[in-house]
Image (cartoon, rainbow, N blue to C red; front, side, top):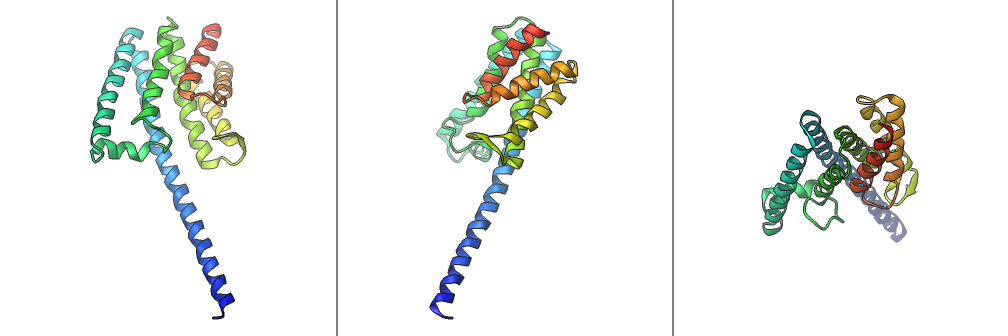
Length: 212
């Protein structure tokens, strides 16, 4: 080969390697996000079920127990980097998260705080349900299909996917028009540059309190 041909071959190999790494990275991010959001969905449905079949007082006790247990697990993970807990968290955590299990803590706190603001159990139930559906599916749709960027880490496809999923989920417990209205409000709030786990439940709870 001439020097020019060898140079072209090397460039092609580097480009192919970059494409391959990008594909692998993309698949990994998708699989990681599926695991992460599956846990959030399970946690949301669990908390919703606890409230639906009991009362606010027992729900708060369960939420505080989860926070306490999570704090212990996070401490173990920080102290022992080779622990099983740390390996599990590494599979679902995002790189920018500084605290072990940060997203799960914020999720539970986001579900817990409005229970001290509103006395109506059904209103509290609605915002947990809205948080569960919108938070989980908007991220999954965004990671998988997101192409039209709206804001940093927010895409049109993710927002529409979250809106659809949240509407379907809420329509099981309220009328379809109300479900769509609450889901739309949650989707708009989700676009704001604040943590979804805290903004969505409070906003939906305030709106639901005035409509239900």
